Image (cartoon, rainbow, N blue to C red; front, top):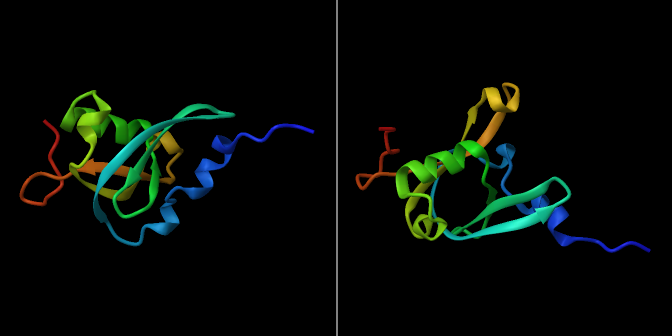
Length: 109
């Protein structure tokens, strides 16, 4: 018998591009680092009760907007959306973007 690592299957519980029909405005309630067979991966638990895999684009957006301390990402307004990316071979990827105080997606500096 072999031992099953629950972390290997966390991706089954995360939002996928097909799940996102329109932008979702929410906040991150928790950030976790999970061990998978692909290495350690970051997951954002959203206040809407869903989880999102934090890819490199999303992490860069969060760091630019809120800093590199993950606790500073919590309870800040964000948009969960999809966009085409060269990093995903031209396929759509789930992306987190910060929202400014007026409710618009924050512009990069």
